[in-house]
Image 1 (tube, helix red, strand yellow):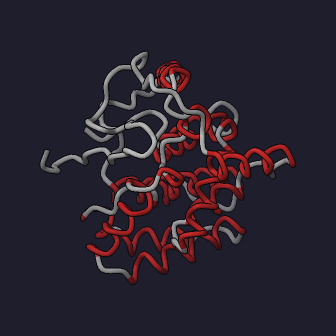
Image 2 (spheres, one colour):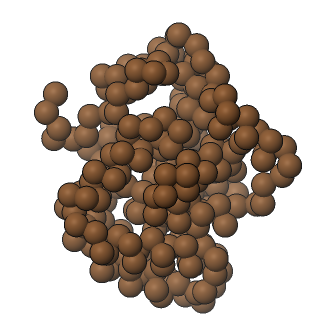
Image 3 (cartoon, helix red, strand yellow):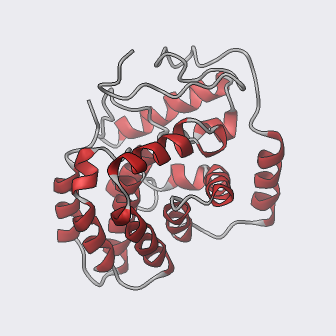
Length: 242
């Protein structure tokens, strides 16, 4: 079961909160990034016009400009082409996976503990992700940031800034329009430091830490969901044949 309500309901709820105040525009930007980074199923495709209208209603900013570029592309694509592109970018390529703890911890025991800690953060804030997605999936992290506010809510985004930079870099190298969504998100965060840039360069060259232990401390997930490097298999989506 998805932790999110239907796309159209989320768009309408987010738009109702829009005003000229920077804080409210920031919440809407985070929610839109969360929506636009989800799998482009029939529901999301049907809401493309509403998503674009919500983006166009944003106060002018670099983050809004990036989302305008993305929703223009999104609206011009055939649904099946969108699905193929999403799977290619996010399910089949480890360097642009949307599971943030992978970039910080790789497939190690530390990653399992990071997932547990993140889930505990959500529960402490009164938010239950449910069983539909892992707590480090970027759309989930973005929805929490929008709900919980810039201090505690955005802390996981700041913690994983280097991973976000690597995802954007990988998407840009591939020529994917999804790079605009990552650029929009990163425009909301503090600028990268020299140490951040150096760490991202190392990640791009060497990859995250490796360990043949997996994620046992957190518990089992989907078949092949966290296969070791070189044997990555994307998670099954709801309704996919096993």
